Amino acid sequence: MTIPLASSLGFHPKPSPQFCEELRARWQLPNAFALYPAMTNGHKNHARLIDAVAAPRDAGRLVHVVCSGRQAHVWPSIQKRLHDLRLEDQVRFTGFISAAELLALYRLAQFVVFPSLFEGAGLPVLEAMEQGVPVACSAIPPLREYAGEAALFFDPARTDDIAQALDRMSSDRALRDDLRDA
Image 1 (cartoon, rainbow, N blue to C red):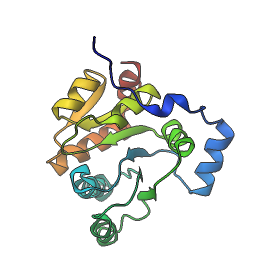
Image 2 (image 1 turned 90 degrees about the vertical axis):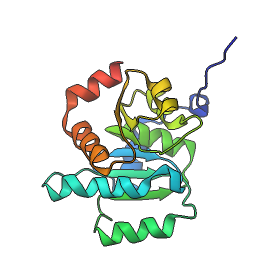
Image 3 (image 1 turned 60 degrees about the horizontal axis):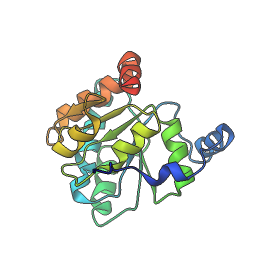
């Protein structure tokens, strides 16, 4: 018998709409944003994600991203890249957060982006689907296996591919609805 992987978020109470809006106000979150829940390890690919956020901005379309998770050893280089590209207002890092705050971010997010270069599992993809949030993620085997036809896939080694996915997910409500339903 095979026991499928699942997240622990199902064991936590769903956040109230009031809690979500208080969190939005406290962290000054935009109305529409992509969520990337992952600590800042090198293979999580935050650097390419940041570069990918700059592309739509330079074409006149803003995509906001909120990144949650512990700020690990590559954090200083990420901070520098954010500053160099002047993206501090578009890409926010919360650091480590509680399960209640993570659930609220899933509820508030327009979609989840997961540009990891490699994974053993990729729990945020499963968490997003459990929470009914559409997903754009790396086209790597574990994520393809988990998401099947229920995600927009991109090549995590190509910044332009990530940028296209961000732009498409942020602007195409029908696509987000289809992925949510899938």
